[in-house]
Length: 351
Ligand code: MAN
Image (cartoon, rainbow, N blue to C red):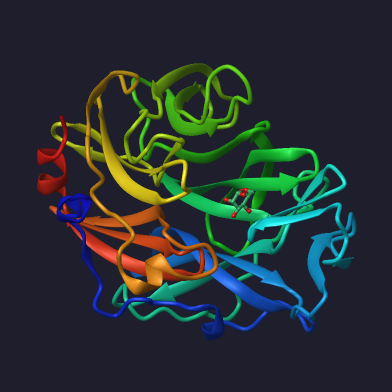
């Protein structure tokens, strides 16, 4: 039934990028997943800032994964899979003696393209890696927003201390300013709006509440783009729907005549990730004007259904050209893909 609600037109070239297409960041590691790219335009090209998730080759009888030490070096942790204190039920996370670890360590890498389809790694641009005690398990899922000539990068900072939102900014993609953690754990899926509204900066974000509450999309305001407050809840999960377990913002919302159009992801209790849309008032984005009842994109292609973590389509970057929205998305937590939507058609699905 839901398949017919999928209004995306997937790129014929999908998957655009697979782990084998890039070189690992250092000897002893291999790339397990390429996923969830932020997207921006710079110097006439389309750029992806892609999440590269790495780990050592896995040997039978043990599980090994990298973490970052305080000096930036990588340490490999090895655990025997016979250990009854080890929980490996989720391919993405490990629980060992009450502590959580990630099975892979992610950094962010820049790729660019003239046609938006064939991407290559240009020379002379740094990799972005975790820095300091709040990023020892890596940085992930970067959203990029351009305000004036400065690009703002919001991403997930992971460490044993929790999962929060980090911010760095740049004007030239060579030098980066560190702004630290702007939203403390547990929080991720943060996207800053591409323009100020009545003098204030706005961002969507996704705190998670362990007891009362849930995994909902919130809106925050800021006088300077660095300090965020006046948090307001704008979208909850919906029981019995495709987005019943968690929802989170994609990239910065798209400005349309009808309002701010946000493509978001929703997961159900089976961890199937689909995409939907929200419409927010242009002048007061805390007012939700519409939401799609059905998903606008459902994992159905082979590269979306099976991979590192199957049944996932997840976007946090796009390019808009008139009515055409080209999203870039992570498929099955392993591949980078593209799909196009008509913005008018997405708007027509809102209820
Ligand atoms: C979830 C998944 C993982 C991710 C962690 C930390 O478990 O999205 O891919 O690494 O959260 O953000």
